[in-house]
Length: 69
Image (cartoon, rainbow, N blue to C red; front, side, top):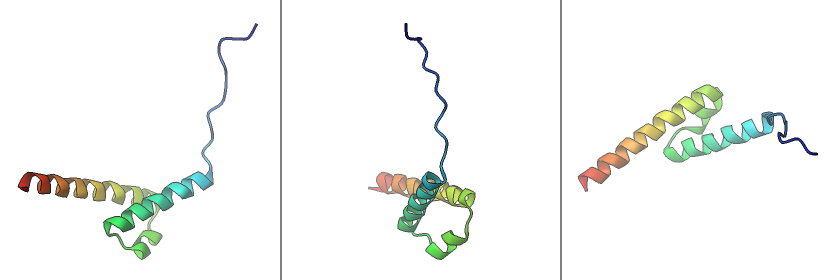
């Protein structure tokens, strides 16, 4: 008889996936108007923080554009 619970370990985070995430975040920031040389000097934490700030800024601009039209 097969046990009801399947025990498995959680998938581990790999360096390749992390680099892929960082690169996609950099591409989004460049599309929003950030400087690529400045992004290359930033740490991953700073990139994530900048992405949050830029997202809030664009959301605020979109809301103000929607209310004014």
